[in-house]
Image (cartoon, rainbow, N blue to C red; front, top):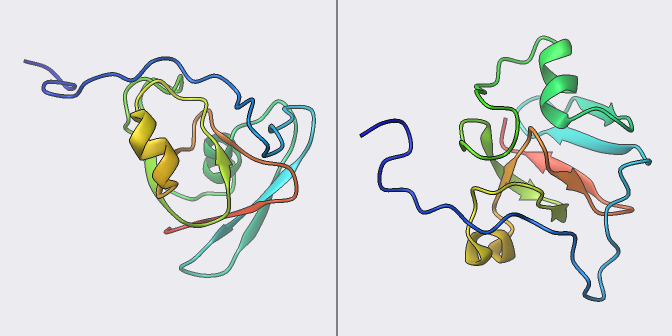
Length: 115
């Protein structure tokens, strides 16, 4: 059946048009690891996944396009802007998980990952 058997794909993510600010891919944001408190700055044009792997943090990944779910991480705090096509609308709204290969933080937010 394959890697994604039984998983329903969500509609492609689009930036929110609600009242919350939309993440700006030209801005940096911070990500903190809950396990050891290390904080990383994710610059424009880079993903959380790229920054973490460059720092030697071991994180599973596969597609790096937000469609497979391999890089999914639990989110302890912070408000993400989901840019994946894996999480359902309900999962995105719950704000408990994030695909670190494509998603970013909303302006002014620091994302805290359960890593």
